[in-house]
Image (cartoon, rainbow, N blue to C red; front, top):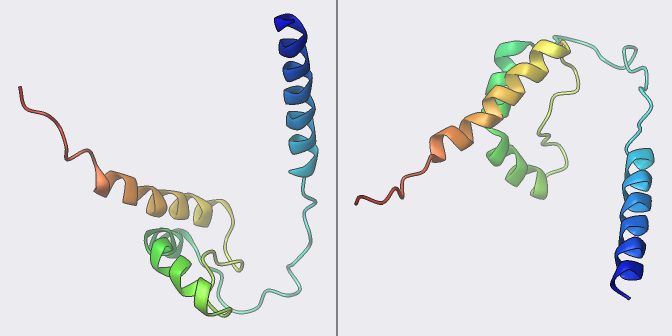
Length: 100
């Protein structure tokens, strides 16, 4: 009885993972014609990543507020955004260390 349940659970999990993998495949859309003006680089990515929590709250109330700048330079903006948004975890830290 247990092996039937385990095999059904394994098959269900595999199918769910497969469906998730196929659903997450997005096609790259050419947007170069739509992008005008300054492209944001590494430093703006760092800044945008750092203010992500504030931008998120703003985006809930105003459709003109975005978290991520689409008009960016690519990998360097992404890297800055990643470092900036990761800074919140570093700032939070683990302040509740027990003293023995």
